[in-house]
Image (tube, rainbow over all chains, first blue to last red; front, top):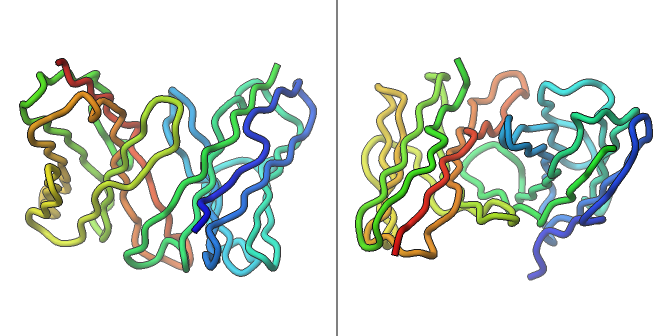
Length: 115
Length: 114
């Protein structure tokens, strides 16, 4: 079974631009969660989508948004990029989401550098 | 107080010894606890999960949970150089009006010295 895939793997943008990242979950998984990882803050939860609906949200500004399609693929968008948005963005998929005793499987991540 | 706290390390352990990694959490209602391993430049991978008080063993790994003390630990026996990585503790906050989420600690960097 193929794992979680993320595209692109690397991205360089300038301040003020916007960016869209893509995540394809493991086949059959309906929950996709997004995380931001930085050396100082560690791994921080952005949001979780299940059946095309945002079900959970972390403490990030509205510049961070996402969506999920009917095939469970998810996109994350960051508008008006700031230098502090430079990070590794990880998505993780699981069958039904964070509830219960499920394992989350992480993708390889998209490394975003904002100049 | 951070929701999930770990000693950032680095923690250096001789090959063959026991590595002990610790994690405390603030939400007394948390129910599920996970240990992830992350090699440099790679994504996290789950190595242990624990849901009830006591010990859970899987090969060289043992997870320990003490809900009264809000403490979870990971022991790695017979440490190998391949165990050198950052270990992330994650806690599943309880469902509360749809705000359930997985909270990670900042990780402990472990180095096994040959």
